[in-house]
Image (cartoon, rainbow, N blue to C red; front, side):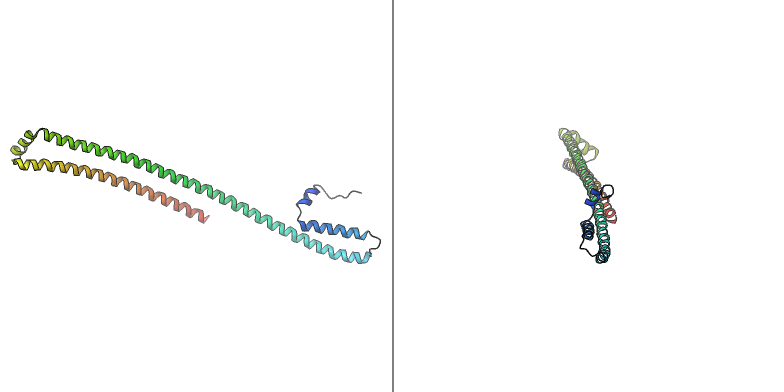
Length: 206
């Protein structure tokens, strides 16, 4: 006579905790004992009732432990998934910050090239002015001495003063442009730091 153990018995048996399988094996062993002629039935029934209660407690404990273990494993999987997501988000933010630095460096290079060209243009204008004055000393001297009533010595001083003033104005213009660029770069860096700190705070709160 075949024993009806229900569908998918092998799968259910393999998935059952070790303590549960052992409890069922012990139950089967007791059933086999009662079939022996020398077994005292009254004694066996009393013993079997006690062992059944013990088996039920063992089975309940084993399944409770299994449930707790499965819950803990699920929590670990969720935590790992969350950590993976946070790591990916952090990597994206770091890549974004790195790209910002690259962009700012590229802007700095462009601005530096512009400043260099500006300085070259200013230097060229200074040389043009100086060349014009040096090529026409008589006309300039005539203008300064007759129209402004300056001596030749004073006229030379005025020309030198004009050269110096042009150079100072050029240096001032370059310095102002550099300061404006540095201020813009500093503001962009502060905004980026504030953005990263805010994102870090949000992740900690979550």
